[in-house]
Image 1 (cartoon, rainbow, N blue to C red):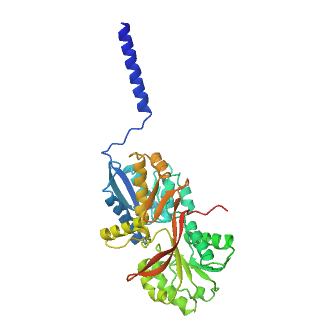
Image 2: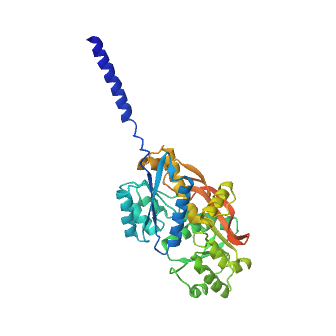
Image 3: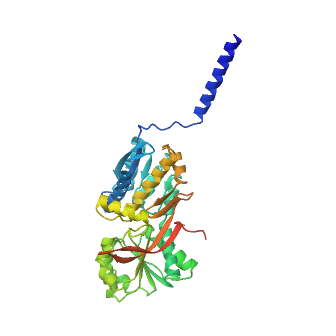
Length: 396
């Protein structure tokens, strides 16, 4: 009888130990359950062409890994937010509550991103931005929002440093659309060029979006060492025509492949060949001279029929960072597990090494670029690299 009691007691202890072990471990996800990636893009809006390139970049990465990660299949769900915040939230609600996605890539447009980030506070669905945005975009979410490309302020900041330190400019004029994103980009430039280095920054001239007649601004523009300039790519050639008519020859400092793509450089090749000096700042151009990027460009061009631009690579890298996080968790795609893993992931990407800081902002290379001719194509070519910088505003 005593022997039987000992056997029963030993069996109970073993069962308890096993039970406690099970309580301490999260169940492994079923290999039959797909990892679900949601993409929000403004496919039927003025940003439709770039949004299509977002989808192309995501699909290229998923093709590369065979739509599988950590032993689980991947399901891609793409939704069109129409460039409208209300529609964006409705589509995000579908992705989160009905489709139960493990991550949202995008939205592409800032106004939609803010609305969706606010909606995802409660679910804490990881959101990985495609394009750089404002610092407020990460703060709008609940710790679930990450941007590997950093902020508009950060991009402008390093362009301002380069303009002063390397180019030797000492005075700057400003002409750009009256929008918050242009304003933040300008503020970063002024912080570096004016406040930190002591350069003179003239009062900005702000214009309505879509302006095509710049004569009222060009007639009163102060001459400076550099013109800090923002214009959508298709309007750059008409602007430069007026710019030359008024006898202005100031070098330009501008965003590059986000708004002035290779096709737009082709439109102004006569200006470039005529000696127009122009610098830009960006996280990526296809002419980055690394083995990783050359392999990416060759594969992308072979698969898609054209060279990747900033949007393609940004979408590719956002997808890559998420997949690296899934691998780091061993396939656990619970929201907190993925968010924690993303803060620890560091990946070698076509644009260089990428990681996130505690706020979810990217630590990555920032390239200063200038137009150049490669073979028969005008493109942006890196002339200077700020390596693995936090693309936020540095503390004063």
